[in-house]
Length: 256
Image (spheres, rainbow, N blue to C red):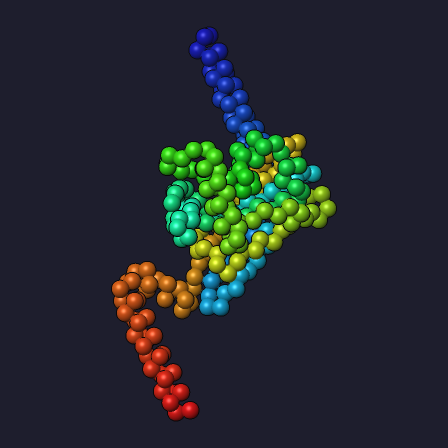
């Protein structure tokens, strides 16, 4: 009798576990569908004469909420130097090496950033240049570190590679939204991450990451690859080309 009773209990336990797993799967699927977003193009092709371009991001939510879009470019180490004037000459004195700095960082929101979520939430998800994590292993005081950090962000903003725009994410009704992401002519090549956050009640309730590739193609890409793979040969060819161009220009002027 005990063996017969144990069998139904085992079956019931297995059925309960299966039902629980299926329920959790459906719950997670429903939660994942709170936010859906995509890009009009996942490839930006840089060719000769490239002067910048725009990519459209569009998506939908399952109801009302705020949307923040964060575009992050390839990361690398960046050294920031401070110049001091000595004897009438500006000389580099101090420097800080920031590690894994995004080469490109742009944020677009439908409202002002400070009205979307508390500072702790924005910092956790690195939404906004003030909350961007910039690490360094150099020993420097907090005040000086803040100055170097501001200088780094200021230089990137001057180059058009860092930006923050509110009101650029527009809603069509309550669920559909879109925004235009601008990439300047000097946009670095590599793999980009486009993160979209759905914010409700000051908390991020859903997020999605979409990849974007910026790549050189055509003749400019061949020249770039040649310069990186064979720098000595590239230098020789460049010198010969400059000499030939100068000789040709001189010959033309002599004929005139």
